[in-house]
Length: 255
Figure 1 (cartoon, one colour):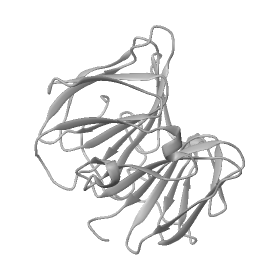
Figure 2 (tube, one colour):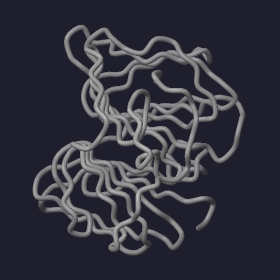
Figure 3 (cartoon, rainbow, N blue to C red):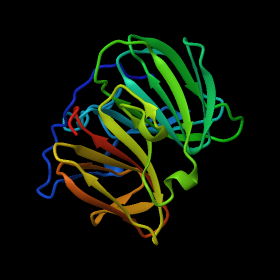
């Protein structure tokens, strides 16, 4: 994705709350209206700058984008960035200088490790429907390397009432392998379901709500909200209606 150079700050300057949670409300994000693109930035990006929201751990970009039909980002470069797009609604097409070409649909992920450098484009191939997606950048755990591109479909059954791992450093359990110290999951849940997980010592986490309303340890979250988790321990996800989220288990090589 364009509109920003690839420079990184690994820590947020936000002071953690005493209970180990930092609520990043959707309404407080940086908003951009480019006509063909509506974008909300959880962290500083392009013309939106807030020194208190430069990233969280190795999460550098969380953009919620809506792209009009037949519009998109022209060919542009990236390097030393781990980038993925999680499609909420619609279709997103990708082409790059590695000769990869794909179209991913709602529930799917496209992932690119920029390595020592790659050029790519992203666009909405539909004649009629917008595409709605989350684009995420993580700081890599190594510089350079060969660029890499992959896609993965995540069925509703895979993430219905559970955390579905789709990115990890070692590609375990059928996930895509990436060059960042994080495990990334998708989950859907409704008012009859509960998801429990344990955040390990020295790890931190982030929850990004894609749609609906949910709770993490009783903290209410709505679509577009993020939640930084700065203390280890048990996490309990519940909802009072259908909800969908991404969960990032963030670490720096610790287990």
